[in-house]
Structure formats: C-alpha cells, structure tokens
Image 1 (cartoon, helix red, strand yellow):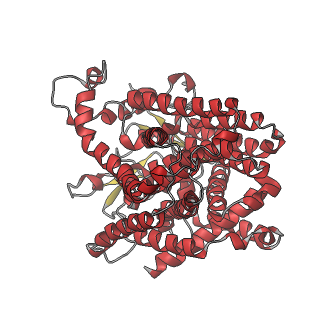
Image 2 (cartoon, one colour; image 1 turned 45 degrees about the vertical axis):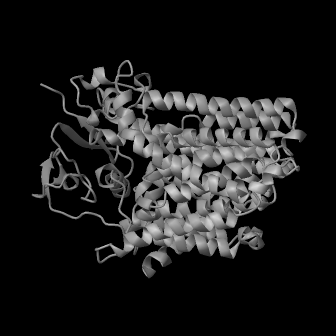
Image 3 (cartoon, one colour; image 1 turned 120 degrees about the vertical axis):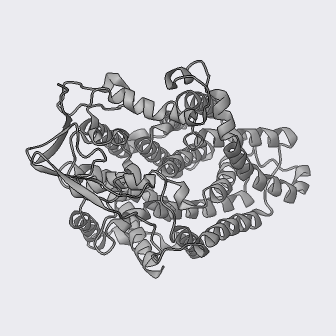
Length: 569
C-alpha cells in the first residue's frame, strides 16, 4: 500500500512539472492563471505527445522513458520554470483528500475487462519495440489505437516496471477530483451555468465512477470531452481576457486529446469551433492560439500517422481512408472493425431470434433487445445524476422564493449573438451527438458526455421555469461529503474482500508456448485452464499472437518490424 502511494506521488510530480514546462510554451504569460489540476492535465497531454514522437524511432522501454523524464527534470530544475509557480493557489486540503480517495480506489482494483485482451498487450508491444507496421494484423483491436495507452506506456519505469502503466487512470482521476472539488465550491457564491454544470457532473462522476476498474480508456475520453464543454461555458461567461485565453486553449487541447483517445468523442471539434466564434465576438486578438493550434494539429497528425502505420488506414472505420497497396494493409480491416463494434454494441449477444447479425442491425430491429439489455444501466446512471440534485434542491428549498437573479446574472451582460452561439452549439452537441451515438455504437459508456449534457439541459430549464432566481448555496459541502463517503465505502468493502497478497491490480500469469515463424519467435497463450481470460496475451512477451502466428508474415526492414497477411493460395 505504501509502495503505491510513493510511486503515485512521484509520477504525479513528474506529470505536474511536465505540465509546468509545456504550459509556459503553450500559454506564455497566461500560464500564471492555471490551477494545479489544469497543469497536470496539460502534463498528461504533453507526455502523450512526446510518446508519439519517441515511439516512431524507439521503444518506450524503461530506459527510454527514464531518459524522457530525466530531460524534463533537467529543464525544470535548471531553468526559471520552477520560479513561475503560484504555490499560494495550491489547496492542501483538496490535494490531501484527493490523494487519499484515489489511493483507496487504486489499491487492488480489478483491471478493465479488456485489459488483458488488448490494452496490456498493446502496451507490451509499445515498450518492446518501436512502432510496428501492420500491428493490427496481430489483433484487429489494435487498428483503433487509443492515445491513452501511449500515455500509460510512458509510465513503464525502473522499479515500477509494467505496474507503473496501471497508474495512468489513477493520476487522471486525481487531477479531475481536484478540479471537481475546487470548481464546485464556486456555486456557493454564484450559480451560473458553468458552476451548475460542474457541480452536477462532479457528483455524478464521483458516485457512478467510483472504481478504477470501471474506467478503461472510456473514462479519460469522456472526462476530457466533459471538461471541454465546461471550459466552453466559461468562455461564454467570462469577461477577463486572460482567463478567456486560458479557457480557449484548454478547450482546444482537451477536445483534440479526447478525439485521439476514443472516436466516440466525435463532437469535440464543434466545441473548438464554437469557442473560436465566441472569442471572435469578444474581439480578442487571436494570435495567442498559434502555438496551441500547432501543438494540437501535430498531435492529431501523429495519431493519424500511427493509425496508418498500424493498419494501412488513417481511420480504419472508413474504407476511403485506407491505402490498400501498402504491404501491411489488412484486407477487410474496415469490415472487421465495424463488425467488432456493430452488432456487438447493439446487444446482439442478448438476442434470441433468428436474424443474422447483418439483418439484426438493420431497420432498428435491435432497439427492443438493446433497450431491455441496457435498461438497468440507464436507471443506474439516472439515479447517480438526479438523486444528489434532488437532495440539494430540498436543502435549498427556501431559495425558491429568492428574488436575486443568479442563474441569469451572467447572461444579461452577454450579447444576443453570443447567447445564440452558446445555445446553437449546445443543441447541436446534444442532438447530433445522441443521434450518431444511437445509430453507430449505442453503448452507454460511449454516450456519457451527450447524455450528461442532455440531463443538465433538462435541469437547467426546469430551474429557469420554476424560478429564474434559484441558487444552490447550502448543502454543497454536505452532498459532496456524502458522495465521497459512498465512493470510499464502496472501495473499502472491495479492499476488505480482496484476497491477493499484492495491493497492485492483478495481472494474470500463466503458461505460454513459443513458435518459430521465419526468423522470429512468436509467443502464444498455452494454458490448460478453460477460463477465457487465460486465452489472451496479457503480459506474455513480445511478439504475442493468440493465433500462434498462423497466416502472418514477419519481417524487418530498416530495423522496423512489418507484419503482413500471408497470401491465400
């Protein structure tokens, strides 16, 4: 337990100093307005950017990752960057509470269901070799790679080894929890749109996402999109030019990053575009966006190139982005990735009729089965969002008769055009987001940002309809304490029933065999256990292929590994 705490604090420190250095480059003097959690989130994005660049030429081994952080430490300690930190802005109580809660959440958590299937094997590939051409030929899941696994890979450090990669979600939850606790306090003084949004979102995430095992990389993608929406609202409300600049850069960075984590955040570009229109309406000189725009564009470019190297397609879900002439292109990759996420995500496994998967997904044949399958989950999410709000409403019932206009005091200062930009952007975000989510891949965890904003809009219009002056200025601390107690209690019960000798999350270890394929050694699971998870690669040494390398060609060109399909005879 103590080991996890020490390494968690150490990694968090490295992420923060990375964020300090990069934020000075991206925001210049505006960086002084950043909170510690915003610096940390920028640090995560910067490290991910660095892994893309390094991995084109080198594996993310323990030595190479150590050199990355050593260079960051050198820059930090031998420049003036450390003198530019506003330590007075650090809230020691919030930091301590957040560390405690995240530590409890991390101890012995059960890895995500896909961890041993393709998350960890992907990381093993990244830390074992530089970028691999045709990696998706080993496993189709590698075709839609997530930048979050790039970030996780850079935490493969000496002493920690592969265990360090298991702290990626924990560090993110720490920064997000600090943000939730700090920003939600503002609603006591001012119930504007952004404060109301972050308060309700905070309580929802603390209650519903109380275990690291529930996260995978859906949580990072969703949280960065939700935070992009939050800072978009703040751009609308704010009049201070320096703060508006900060908020815009955060919207740009977070929106770009979440898109590279998971394509379910496809509406993030709308927030960037709408934010740009807002700062244009506010007549702010846009020269400040040049550096963050170049940085974000390069991040997207790196991600697209990595996708192409892995699969022969820039976006494997769309066939027109594929170059079928390249050696490593997997014929039928688009059909494979779409079938892997199509009928499956529409609950075909729960269907008991006679339709084929292809027929099942047509003409909304899937809706009834899908709804019955997901009805309990919808109810869980609904309760997690609305119960805390109802409690706050009853605590603040007397404010129903308040004559002071808090919900609208910001809006009255804004022009009609600015308000129209806000309204149209939110409606498009929700309507288009929900429509595409429902039609393409209606898994609840993929649609959380859109469902969350929809529920928030319902709440906002209810409050405006009932009383334009309503304010939540009582019970905020109480409801947060209750939410945190629920979170802690749930995790303590899990720890009490935890049977492993190690407090680190479990990585399955089992027998594997080896096969020579050309001049290369191919490892594969060879467990006699019928447990399905022991058929996955987990941390089996590189190269691991569940199919024993059958049907694949392995070769080296200019020191790069190229994996291609054998031609059918």
